[in-house]
Image (cartoon, rainbow, N blue to C red):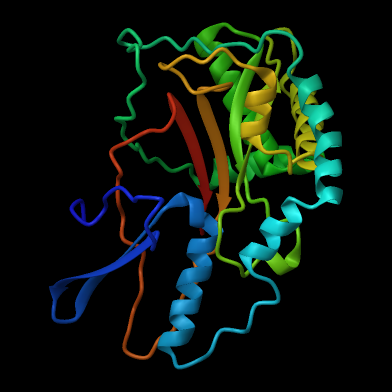
Length: 285
């Protein structure tokens, strides 16, 4: 598997490679290696669903639009006007010098960022899970908002800082026609919050709720343009604007009934971390 995954050259198509490793006569690993520029998490699900349909002898339904149609719409005058309005919102969010998160670490930060890392997995039991959902329901919030509030409080306790920026991915498929299209739609939202020991958790959750609703409303504005507009001082030892990422994924573990074939995801640890710290929460069964 490690030999199969290698760097792509963006000048040379294709940006998708497929391979099959035979472990035994009736047991194989099917490998998809895709450059992120052509694919995101939803695309992977679409790909697997279409593979299952084709394997079963079905034709996937025809697409109403292609990714190129989405690209043309993105560059249209009306959309550019819309993004101009969204830009004002984000520049207001980042007025003043953006904070730099100083996490207490075992080693000095290297002059140039490296991406060596590890994934540590753990589970929350159903009692904790239900408790979190109850807090969300009682306060008109989502589970995502409750978890983000808790995560930023944790960062505040680690660092003592009361002005924190966390990055979060957003699917970016704001129209139903985009759901079955394979491509890169994901945007990154930089969420600035102010966790403070003086606030109660519920009053802080209310602030997070407002921050999230505002961010969702202005989610089309590209993160890379925000970084450019803010003219953040570039530091080769850090990512621009934030050093930590949070995501919540509601993955539907679909069971695919295929004649003579059973499909299960193959666990893999990439041995890397794109940020100082990422918390990825997955809701399972």
